[in-house]
Amino acid sequence: MASKRRLQQLTPSVLIPLAGLPPRPLGPGGKDNEAAIDQLVAEMTQRIKAITLAEAENNIIPRFNQVKTVACVSAEFRVHEDIPVQLRHGLFSQPASYPALLRFANAINRDDSKKDIRGLSIRVSNVRGPVVWGEPGIQDFLLNSYPALFAATPEEFLSFIRARQEGRELRFFLNPLDPHLKSLGIVLKAQKRHLSPLDIRYWSTVPFRLGETGGQVVKYSVTPCSSYRTTKAVRPGENQLRAAIKAHLQQEEACFSFGVQVQKDPESMPIEDASVIWDESVSPFQTVATITIRNQDFDNSESLAVCERSSFNPWQSLVAHEPLGRMNAVRRLVYAEAARLRNKE
Ligand code: HEM
Image: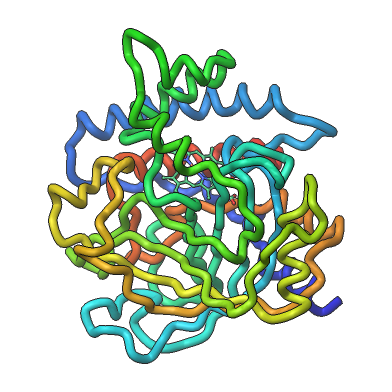
């Protein structure tokens, strides 16, 4: 039961008054960009509200993305000692261990046995340093199981949201007047059957700053480092991924390496195109931390309900890891409003 208590302490998100905080300046791009971002946020928020309210069941409003809560587990986030000096910023500035909460999810399917894109949201607590937004002491990282996003820009993402609201997602991809064939290619490659969320890689897909001022531009990836691997579905069916996590942890603790990839070339590693994979042979991910998940009681209705109500935001971040680019810019208020709606605040 101690682990359940710990999980609840690590899930303060529903209490964070993110949406009540003053807006943050958007940086380069000037007033026109700021106005365009405000418009995107307003339309996305309104459409996401309508979509998720229409999908509510048993008085639970689902997330717009990463809808199926597979599991929330508590973990240790240990920052390494031997980090190259140029990466020692913010959370990575000195070796230390932090409590963390991990949420594993499926993007669209409730049934774990179906092909999907998986999500991993990480909340590191007790961190030191000023935050760009949100609550002091907390650093969130949001990752997907594919290194590129199907939408290059927030405008493209909005076109998809419009199509989804009309129940015509295919039309977004195959509209003869405005086809999105690259997006379709990414979705088809990204959706996979997985045997365990503990055995797959995750990527931030969009970039972040590393450093308090100026600094470098980086992406994140989380790579499994457990010796244990799930080789076949434990309890095939709707909740097989949850069952796989449970079986893994009962056998052996799970581990992930947390890596940072530094932008080397702004042309081939752009900030403003989330559909471009930054070449790992040009700039490999460098491990800066290890995440360890020990056996715990997470597969119970109370923990799953807390997990469902939790919320993460890429802007819940230290200044040293500020989200970059227009895609990230729209996410701040869109996520905050979506979380507020879900939790009926
Ligand atoms: C304009 C771009 C994007 C929009 C509008 C958007 C929208 C959303 C929304 C509304 C949610 C639900 C939030 C909540 O109810 O608490 C969500 C969740 C999520 N999104 Fe995005 N998203 C965008 C880009 C991205 C990108 C680039 C990633 C990259 C990894 C990402 C990963 C996730 C993850 C992992 C979650 C689940 C968070 C959780 O566990 O609560 N999204 N997204």
